[in-house]
Structures are given as C-alpha cells and as structure tokens.
Image 1 (spheres, helix red, strand yellow):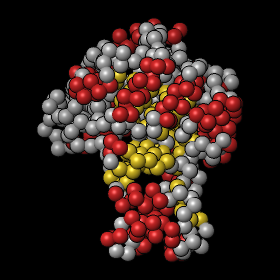
Image 2: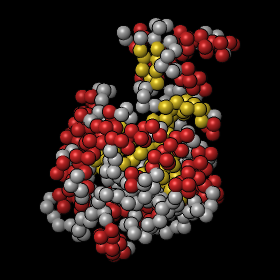
Image 3: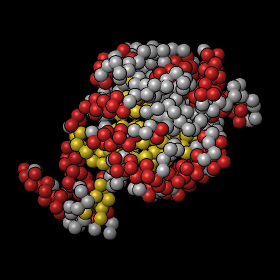
Length: 399
Length: 97
C-alpha cells in the first residue's frame, strides 16, 4: 500500500508539539520503503512510474545501519512500507532489531503475503502496529481495484488475525471516484473488523495516481456527501469504536497543505535502493538526492543539497515569498508545484494565489465531465511493469 | 462509577491504553506516548505521572511515590487527578477498580 504519508505529532494539555520552527528539526519519522515489489496493481499508487529501473534493494545489514543511525538522530517512528514490505523475507529480523533500538514499529501492508503464523512471529519480534490497506468494502470492487482475485478474502482474514493477536490496527482506504459512494459500507466494515483507526484518505496525485488522476478525482459533490456521511458515523459512534480520519484532498482547497510539516523537517524516507528523500514522492523532482550507501544519515539530513534545498523560506518565489501564510503551509507541496507548473520553487497551484491555480480548477472540471459520462483523455493504467512504458510516455507528453 | 468518582477513589488503578507505548526519549529529554504513526511529547510533570502508570499501582500508590520523589512540591494529589482526567479524556489511559 502506498498512497499515504500521514503523521501527527500532536499537542495537547500536558504535551508539547514538536517539529516546527525555522531550525532544522529531527527526522522523527523514518519511512523504510523496503521494496517496490507488490502483488497488487492499484492505479492510485504513489510509487514511481519507473518500477523496473530501481530493482536494487538494500541488504538486511544496510537497513539495520540506517535504522541505527536514524535512532541516534532522534527518529522514534519507523514505518515498514513499499511496495509490499512482506515480500522481504528478512522483515521479522528488521522488526526485531528496530524494536530493540527503541522504535515504535509500524507495518504498512496490503496483507498479501501474511498468514497467522507470520502475524504471530512479528508479534514476538515486537511489532507495535499493523496498518492493513483495503481497496473497497466489497469483494468484487476491491479485487478489481487491486488487480487481484484473492486480495479481499485475504485482507479480511488478516485484519481479523491482527486484532485477534492484540495489535492496534489501522485500516487504510484510499478513496477515489470508484469507491467514494460506498464510504458508508467502508466505515461499517471497519467497525465490524474492530479497527482502532480508519484512514479515509482521498487519493493524492503522485506517481501512478497522477497519470490516473482524471479517473480518480471525485467531484466536489461526492466529496461533500462522503464527508457528511463520515461525520454522521462519528456522531453515531460517539467516541466508541474506530476513530475515523477523513483526509481531504487538496484539489478542493484554496490553500495548500503544509506538506510533510515542512521540507526535511521531521520526515525521512529511504527508498528501496537506499536513496534518501524528504518525502516518498520527491524522487520525481529534478534534484539530486543522496544515498545511504554513500553518506551517513547525519550528513544526508543536515548537510546534503537535496535536503537543504527547500528548507527555510529563502528559496520561495512570489506569491509565497511575501505571503503572510508562508510559515503555516511552507508554500505547499514541492512535488505538486513541479508536476503542475514545471518549477518546484513555485507556489503549490492548489493555492488560489498561484497563477497556475487554473490547472487545479481544470482538473475539477474534468472530474465533473467524466462523472457526467464524458470520455477521459488517457486510459486508466494499473500499476505494473507491463504498463510502465505507457505511463512514462503519458508523463513525457504532459511536459 | 463515573470518571470523577474513579479519580477520587484511592483504590483506582490507571493503566496505559494498549494502543499507546510510553517511552523516555533521550533526544527530546522527555517522555513520549507513541501510537500508530503518531507521537505525543509529554511535559515534565505529565511525563512523571505517566511513568508511574503501570496497570498495577493504585492512585494512592502513585500519589505517595511522587510525593516521595518531589518532597518540596506540596500536595500533589489534585494535580495528579487533574492530569489523569485529561489523560483519560485523550484515551491515553483506562481507569479500573
């Protein structure tokens, strides 16, 4: 599963928030993308289009060295992600060692490649939490979206096993045009499966999701209904049962999201081949990013060009530079700015102050047209190596 | 029993909710509560109180231990009950008899 990057460093009475301000923060959140291999083919995947080019993967020892360095620098949350992390046969060792280092360990998985024995082995190794992704609330739709005939039954079995073995469980549903109308059923399934948290994450448009955007972006009206439904269930649940987290899509906002809580501020992703990134999409930017095989994590985080590039506010152009909201949203998402305007230092076009905001408005219009029965301009492409060349061609034609 | 009754009863046993893990973070010089994909940094007194919550000690034990640890702090029972109320509201802890 790969279309989320949720992280909260919350502040409450008795607590202090962390990870803000001008000084370089600590990499509190380390995301280990262990592999790009995945048995599913979700069209909303945020992985790079070039799945073949990066076949290299770090070894067990190389990962452990990354974890150790990260922990010393203050990382506390460690996510095992991908691709599908279960593909790695050394996952249990990685979990055990990371847990011994003091990490809170999160397994972010489709559930495919797991069985009750493996769930139990991970438990013994100290795994703290499992997040299981679903594509939909019914077998037919789920399997069609995932591109796998056995996915749904396996996911149900694993979600039940995860709870039976006492783990905290998050269920993640990436929401888009084809499943947004079933959000009530999705919530009911989550209640039945006794999830602790449910992420109802409207797809964000990176990697494969970007080239499939016109097939994924819901209409404004669908979105309003889905949010109202979610709120109705929240009231009904009244604090009992799963906590529902509705992640609104920035395409329907007038101000951008504070992406990753700031560039190189709390979040550090390591791609399967060891490339270090400030977010899991940053590979799409025309920047050089360092590799953990060449430099220490300390060097990478504090001193590499890639990580320093968009820190602070000096790099900003207008309208961000003189904007009184720049400390709130950091000008939005660099990857989105690059993909939609061709310049990563521009304001995220989600912002209505951006001169490129029309691109977002046009995407909303396209969503309306397709919902009304219009034809799209590009085919819906399942995420797999077979479709890779076609996907890369589409991107090349956009630029 | 209501929450406020539980917080007034010396026999109440608070326990950290199973979703959370409490841990001292050297780099933050603070106790933190870790949970799926998130973290709450606790301030000094909140951290000291949470550190006493182990699912075994009663409210009376916790007050006594903290009074011993901070002899100059005056009567702590009110502050402790107040924090535990917040912690319960946040679902960080359960209160059991």
